[in-house]
Length: 132
Image (cartoon, rainbow, N blue to C red; front, side):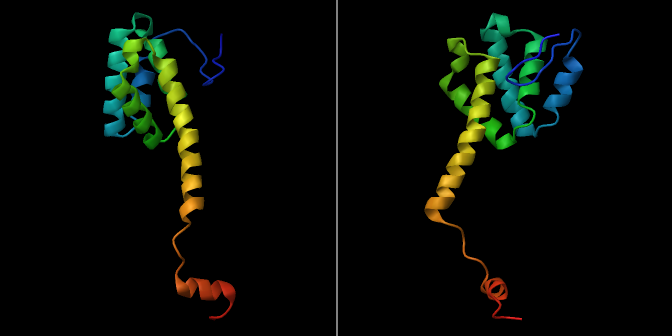
């Protein structure tokens, strides 16, 4: 048995359609449709990626990421038509992983630049001990 270093997927022989379906239905309808179009384009354009276990490995690799990161990355992937350049599941998975890290850093930087919204005055007085 071989284990993928990037996502932790461990290959086991057999049909993966049931697992693929369960991983897809854990997502929202919008994300599921985006993933289906990306997967369809990858499988039609890149012949080596037209395997069910590769699709399962991809979905398994992105299972822990939020829908917002997946939506952002898949839209960028489809807009640039990376599948026509021969960039398949591994490239899309890496895009999702990197966008998750980048968006967190961007949000932190934006919060530092703009600051937070002010607290309620009553809560602030209670924190400082003025109001009991």
